[in-house]
Image (cartoon, rainbow, N blue to C red; front, side, top):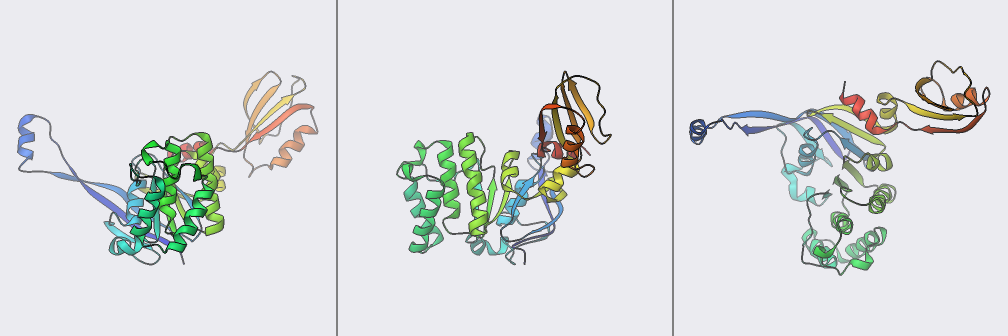
Length: 324
């Protein structure tokens, strides 16, 4: 049974129309007019336990609105959202015990308290058993390498240290589901890598279900097997990450440095991208010609100095999909 079920969900907002000019503005104080904006439009998907799913889309596409409906902050205009078989909005307290949330640009830490005291405060809020709390805290602190600054007030922490603390707070009560919204925004490459490794560890050892929204495609590449893409509130893709790249990107890139510049003939399935001196760059679709066949067909006919193959990029695939 899926832990998250979204069935034909739409969400509309009333938007106040603000007229131009002094007199129309004064009139609008007494007679207001509104238009309806549909932020999410008929979305359906289900997510099983232990899946790590990237939820992607441009700014304003409806990602945050969807997450707010999943957490119970918003109620759908139409359709149903079920978390572990229950509607989150109508079971907010029970749902809150089963989920953890990290918003990259919104902190849930207490500015003047050391992190350790903040953790104790959240233990009381979630009513976590002391033994379970200590076990979770030790595991999370160790995984995120935080022991050296546990007694440091939050206001003195770096952004990367604070983000690690946000993750601990979100997971102290051992939730079934974790929602991550831009968890690596503004972080250095080392902290980003630590958080990505941590997400993979959660998936493997705790079977935590994770929904990740981010504009950093390396987060998606390194943690997710599946992505859901939305545009203007509508779902436009739901499936395997590699299949998505294969279907919508320009394919694999092959770069070859030959020993000489003599004229050469290549398989018609290799598309010339660039030629500069002894170096030639091709693109190809591995569904049309296997990587092993590409390499074999070239190395048997010509002498080469170097050869490299670049995987399709998820940014290219998303750009292709959204431009259709």
